[in-house]
Length: 235
Image 1 (tube, rainbow, N blue to C red):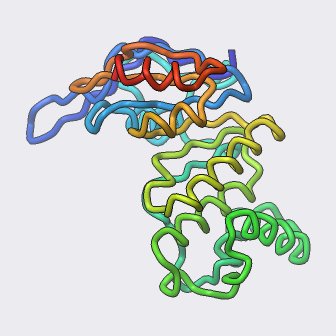
Image 2: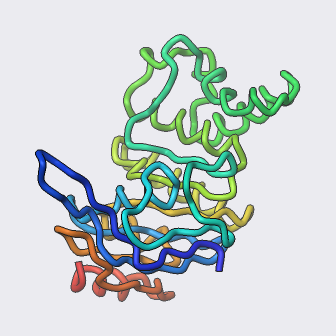
């Protein structure tokens, strides 16, 4: 199994009181799967994403990727957070190149790779712009391009399309699906949008709130209308 989550629990101390974000979650994920973590606010889906990505260690249980316990973030994987994380003094092109620089890729090749993904997210006319000159949605598209340029094994995405207009959101959803299938990327995607989860996912992991527990895992059938109705029943 590529990713294994076994009886994982994450607890925090808040105001001298113990708080459980998620509890006793077990989940197996195959290489190349598109998994959506679905649930209402406060169900621990972002915390679970961060734990699988290595940013938060679980309090109980274990998480492994390719048999190795997750104890820290891996350079093989990338995470796209809700905030954009762009460097304000860098242009769009230079922001997308950022993750490629430590790899010692030649400048011309680096620019070509960055340009490819900038074009993919529809910002080819803004390569020399700075973040302050872009809308919030455009800045998120830059962060997506930067992540994709890294050619990661796993892409962790925490509601990355929330700030985008409907047309751009649909285009990027299609692009992400193509990347997942064509390049065999494993994607773990947090959302509270049922229709988005059904459109994107191979399987939908539904969590209950306070604390987050695994309620069910839905395989997305060919008839997505059926999946939408099932998700509405269980969420």
